[in-house]
Amino acid sequence: MNRINQLFSQKKANILSIYFCAGHPSFDNTVPTIQALEAHGIDMIEIGIPFSDPMADGPVIQQAATQALRGGMTLRKLFAQLEGIREKASLPLILMGYLNPIMQFGFEAFCQRCRETGIDGVIIPDLPFKDYLADYKPIADKYDLKVIMLITPETSETRIRDIDAHTDGFIYMVSSAAITGAQSDFNAEKQAYFKRINAMNLHHPRMIGFGISNKQTLETAAPHAAGVIIGSKFVSLLEEYKGDAKRAAEELLKALKN
Image (cartoon, rainbow, N blue to C red):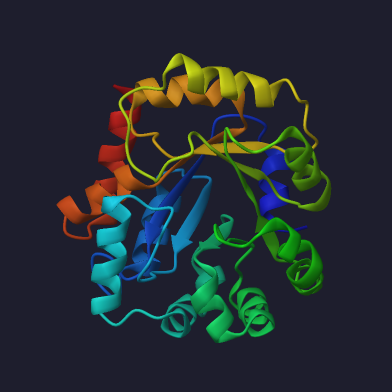
């Protein structure tokens, strides 16, 4: 069973997934960050593929991607870093990146390298759903790579149900139709969105991301999904503690409790 499916079959609530950008704040930080996060009880990790035009990302992740690219990080080098990762980490690993570098690598070659290195899924924010169904899903399925699709408050009910019917793993529920970035709270409109999607009784579990950074945002979002995804807050902490992922993880968990 794919590790993503295994996680959601074993744990139905309070799942915590963390995003970081490969190559940030230093080129060789990928494996130590994965190991530190797993050691601190994180359930799932999203590894960002740095790209020069990350349109869904806010300034924190944009800056991390820029720094990673300047340090020489590429998709090919990331796969090289991930060789043997399954001897060091057992939690689900997802690559998150934009279509351009993946297509330059070659989508089937990308899927094959994901399987070889032990990557369980991929999130491609700028991949249109109809293109996914027509051109990408058959290849991804061949390699048991889960393509995770995003929904926002503007996504129609019809499209949400189509995504629920034709994808696997989980649905990435973006908290708002905005870029990534930490928020102090979720307003009534966003909470209504969480409740509306929850009431649809979708087949697949959902993870809520974008804006979760503290106890208040965590406690507001968590009851409406299987768990939450945190990115910008952790990326900021990695920067602050100069790549010390152990310290960054400790400070993040502290912020989520207090």
